[in-house]
Length: 281
Ligand SMILES: Nc1ncnc2c1ncn2[C@@H]1O[C@H](COP(=O)(O)OP(=O)(O)OP(=O)(O)O)[C@@H](O)[C@H]1O
Ligand SMILES: CC(C)(CO)[C@@H](O)C(=O)[O-]
Ligand code: BAL
Image 1 (tube, rainbow, N blue to C red):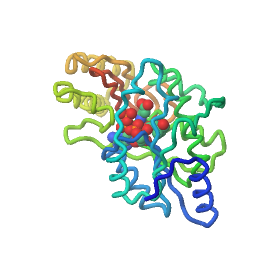
Image 2 (cartoon, helix red, strand yellow):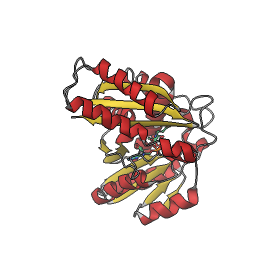
Image 3 (tube, helix red, strand yellow):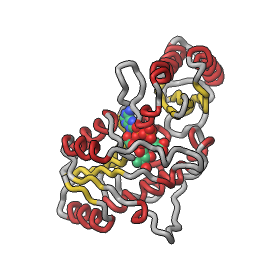
């Protein structure tokens, strides 16, 4: 595995590979790898000749007062894990090379970026879209692979690629969970023992929502209220950011519950802001 931190070097290597007919896949990450990340790499490895994983904790997607400084980092262990997955290039740019002092260009996917997580993190998706657009330009992948845990991110990136005519297929892969149902996330490292014990309730709530849908509930507003009550009762230490039922492609609120509706939740449990979602039907 090559570890490359220079933008020009990764771009030259990837462009040459693409021109010579190799298939490229990119898995963008912020590191501190867990099985969720590794599942994306494994899927991409099967598909491509050249697998690039980027590892960059992107300051532009963190708001003031968020956890940029404390975000978990462990480069040595990430290098070992990526190399065991057969990654060809681990791209680890420095902050100054992606955002030099005179940096001035931002990518904003309007509409969707203000919903769900965008309500409490207003600059977040502008930072995500910008860095992912830069990563696409640097690595020119045929496919880029993202996790469905960050559902909103996935569809925003897909829309950005379509709107900007970037020739990449944006692939979404299923959420990998711990045995007790908690969605794997680097931020789970922030949970203390009690919080970790309580955290699987986030997913239990989503299973409850799916059950209510399957038993015939059709009113999205009622399901949101029931799910909120579920969390208040079963996860009282959690501070709800949002509990929303949305159309999985547009993130708009559907008039009535039907297959393709997504139940999405974000809540703070101690220092960790956890997100999760489930497709209904
Ligand atoms: N449990 C998971 N299952 C599948 N994919 C995941 C999972 N967790 C993260 N991913 C995906 O891995 C990619 C990189 O995500 P990132 O490095 O931010 O990890 P994370 O665990 O989501 O961290 P955070 O705690 O910041 O949410 C994203 O496409 C994300 O959706
Ligand atoms: C896509 C991403 C790597 C952009 O920084 C990040 O938002 C993430 O890890 O999900
Ligand atoms: N995977 C999401 C990255 C973030 O919350 O900044």
